Image (cartoon, rainbow, N blue to C red; front, side, top):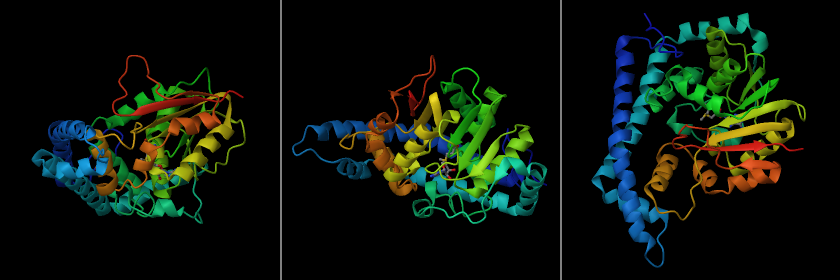
Length: 356
Ligand SMILES: C[S@@+](CC[C@H](N)C(=O)[O-])C[C@H]1O[C@@H](n2cnc3c(N)ncnc32)[C@H](O)[C@@H]1O
């Protein structure tokens, strides 16, 4: 018999499976709190020494220098292993109850077909199919259970900090949205945790989640239905949206842009600017900018994430002058929005307002 749900997350197939994933989450928490800070400190210290050298070494040289620091080796090994164990544990457990899960998705689809638009002939862009992002087997689109697996995996990733959508609810509350919005769009919505958070914040608004990946949307739709929250999920490319010009009050892209090649990122910014009404806001929550020449521990972690954790497009995004791109399309851009009395952690929030 499958396990009870964990907050808004569908339960595992058995207690053994749940215990395994819980163990992996504990290992990840240990690594993040004890080992990764030592890698970062070593990277900062060695990087500071390198910065004084002439010619100035590159961040790749600092990355290699960390190969000789035992704590950094340990942090990297644990990062990669816990990620792989996380996907194995979450994928295996849901595959054991795949029939039950598929029935649950179908029931939701039969009960509320108008809230889910999937195109069976949808052609996924090449950049999206090129790699399993975050090492998730089958990526977001090529495993019927990807939504379940992603949600359970992200529970481990956030080491419990996003249980019950806590983080997404906070992030949706951060978005500066005026008055009573009629329509809100969540771009790259994944399993729809910020989509439902918006509806909880603005019950009168029509809220849409847009994503490329059908399995993510199917799961998001069934999950929202189980929560009793009525939101729309549509398969589509955030760089080619199906909304009319000036028809949306607010849009969000939460941890989407670092997964896009530069030309797609530009397309998404253009589309957000097109669909928003004058005065409407586009909030972007993502990795912070890092200068390509920065010799630091956090820069080495970002490269590690790209090379060993399936994030092919993240370095180009963090190195780019993304704020300049936003300013080319929006009249008013706050590149470092700080919600009052709240820490934004390792994320940078940019808020754009359409002025005309
Ligand atoms: C890291 S997940 C973030 C999901 C969600 N925003 C969250 O905070 O949990 C990135 C999502 O963006 C989607 N995605 C990637 N490229 C996209 C595009 N061009 N248009 C729409 N969605 C896209 C992926 O399928 C994936 O679900």
